[in-house]
Image 1 (cartoon, rainbow, N blue to C red):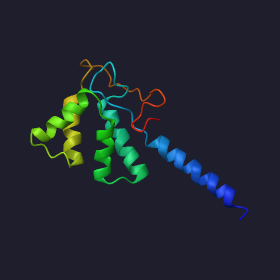
Image 2 (tube, rainbow, N blue to C red):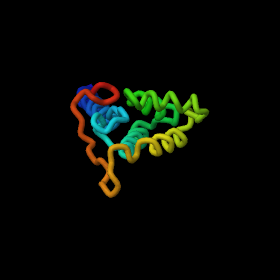
Image 3 (cartoon, rainbow, N blue to C red):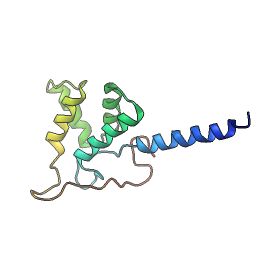
Length: 125
């Protein structure tokens, strides 16, 4: 029983580390508001899915929860256009086709900023 506080502390630390590792920035589909490039958002979601062992349905749900403003309208339009929004690879390809070069000029490096203000992720921080 003497190790119980240490085990609880370790479990809490592990939970906090996982939460921080799976915190995904919001995506607006607007260069002035987005804090992460589209391709890097996909990388973050895939990495978070690996860390938290999300299945494809959970990965899609987490992705949808991060969309705001114009990006929400884009996603809703996919289903209206007959795109299979239940397939991660399809949604990912459509997302990158639409947003990968938004706000970039030919020859510019991709936006690399992963920084965001506390409380601005999908889970509110």
